[in-house]
Structures are given as C-alpha cells and as structure tokens.
Image (cartoon, rainbow over all chains, first blue to last red; front, side, top):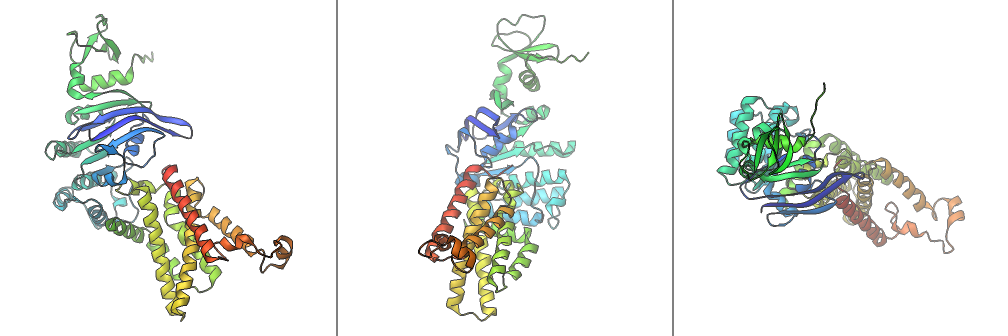
Length: 270
Length: 200
C-alpha cells in the first residue's frame, strides 16, 4: 500500500468532522474520494499531507508512519487555489523546482506553452481556471510519487476539463504514479478513477475498486424482491442492492455513488 | 534542507519586501528601546502573521513540515538581525566585541519574543497585541529593583535583587539565565505550533 488510512478522526472545537475514516490506496491507482460538500474530503486530504494533525487514527505513507521526509514525494493542489500574493509564475517554478528533487522542466514548459502561462505575471492575478491549470502543471511536473488533487477540474471549461482529466489519467497509466483525487463531480470520475471511497458526514460508507463495485451491485426495479441482497439505497425509480445474485442490471458508477449517498431516503416535495 | 531554506527565504523576501526594507532600516537606529520595538514589529510580521492570517496552509502543502517552517522562519529572523547589527555597528563605529555583545543580547530578546508571538498565535490570539503587552509587562517587572525608586522600595526583595530581571528578555540581568529562559520560550512555542496545528 502506498497510502493507508486507519480510523482517522478529526474534530474542530469539539465537533467531529472525521469519524473513523479508513481506506487504502495501492501504487499506480487513481483513487477518488467522493462525497457531498462538507463530507470531510478536504479535511481527510489535509490530514494526509500534514496540514492538520488528526485527533486519532493512523496514516501510513509509502509503508511508514507519516513523516516530513515523505512530503518530498507528495505534491498537493489545494481546493481554494490559494497563492502567495506577490510571487510570479516564474517564482513558483523556481520554488517548486527547488523543493521537488525529481522536478521536470520539460513537462512544465509543455504546459506553459500549451496554456500560455505568463510567468512574469503574479499568480494571484491569474483567473481561477488558469490557477487550477497552473497548479495541475506544477504538481505533474513535480514528478512526485503521489499527487493529492482537491477538486482538480473545478472552474474549468469543458474542453480544458477534458484535457486535464486525460493528463492526470496518463500520469497514473504511463508514469505509474498514484493520484488521490477529491471531487463531487461523480460523472467524470468513472472515466479516470480505478478505486474510490464514498465519504459522508465524516465516515467512509463504501470503498472498493470501480470494477469490483460494479460487479458486486445490482439495480433492481422497486417491484422486484431484493431479498437476496443488502439494500443500499434508492436511485431514481430503482433500488441499489449489494449482491452476487444475477438480478436486475449492473449499475453505472454514478448510480452506485448516488445509491450510497442518498440511502433509502426519498425526496418528494409535492 | 538548503533548498528548503533558499525557497523559504526567497518567498519571504518577495512577499514581504516592503515591510522588510522599512524595518531593516529602522533596526539601524542605535537607541535600544526603539530597536526593541522595531524588532517586535519585525517578529510579528514574519511567521506569527502568516499563522494568524491562516496563510501557513500554503507552506505546509509544499514539502515543508511545521518544524521546517518554524525553524527556517526563525533562521530568517536571525539572519536579518545579524546583518542589520553588523551594518549598524559599522555605521556607528562600534567595536567588534561591542557588536558581538549587542548581537548576543538582540538574539536573546528576539528568540524570546519570537517564542512569545508564536505561542500567542498558536493559542488563537494575535501576532502583535499579546507580544506587545508582554513587552510592556517585561519592561515594568524588569525595572523593579533598579531605576524606579517607588517600586524599588515597594517590591524589592530583602537582598535587593529582582530575580525576574535576571531572565528578563529586555534587561537580561544575567545573560546566561536570560538565554536559557529565551530558549525555553522558543522550544515551548515550537511544541505548541507542532501540536496545535496551524490552519483555521
């Protein structure tokens, strides 16, 4: 395991935000942390790279307990796209190349040319979409063994979003690196992620590989009996069940996510 | 480690260029009490301000541990102090041993107040207000038993010795004791900063 999280707990002012989060990430995986806003995704990621100190639980990176030494092998894109106020694009490149021993200038130059980064300009003045692409460029060029990307496609137009998804997907497939991605864009995650954890209210509801999750769940219509499996939740007019029996139909990835997140509650406003 | 130091120093010099230039010039002022005040301003504008404003998150998302950030920021402060003291000493024709003695005293003061400012922000208070109040208290309690006649008569111990004055970061009645006290404050600040977390 390249990342192992066990029973992670974190509270702010006595209010628990993470309540026993556990998952494993293998080398070369694109692992997606999926959940609604406020589920605890960002808090989990911040614990992973040492920004927050957990109240309990265990984090192992590269087979060892978390240490500052392991941070050189992790590159992070934070959710808010916060930047240093006065640093230009060029200053950022210099800083990252100093901090990451395997920094690859050629990769960054390719990004800079393609997306026309102005390296003389202060990064703070970039548009939010440009900041996102700039951070993706930095993290990929860092050549780090693990990338932690918090909502990496937020604020991007559809064309660039598609390109960025392809870039980060290739980072795992061709470079054999690991990516942990947090998102609530469940429709795009099926294309790129190999494994995932669904998180809600600070707890992991379900964690698996995408293929195994699809194989072990079925969508059945509400008329059908679900006696031979565990009822997970409602997805539109159907019910998601966890079973190895050949009933109903195989669900899509997003249907599995919606089933777990929605549970058995139904919203009928009229 | 040197790469981390270079990256951090570059970032600080670019981000805080304006205030660093002004305060560096003001630190050349030879008058001790004013220099202490400007030193406090300098300390408050470095890491304590970043922590207070929640800006430290950015550094910690890079390959810096909290310990790296704390100690490199401290090293940055010390570097500025030593450079300004040497320039100031040369400018005002102070002897080499005088400069050395001055630097030692300033380092003890700065270490203590860097510790106090970091303790303050780690506990959720401000980066300047609490250290400034401590500075006033320090100057008051350190003065007891010496220049202030009224307090001298009122509070002095039978031996006439004010033990606080020995460790006071301002008065440094005993350089070694003041150094130990400053080091204790600095280490306490480091432990708190590591444990309490840095982000809002």
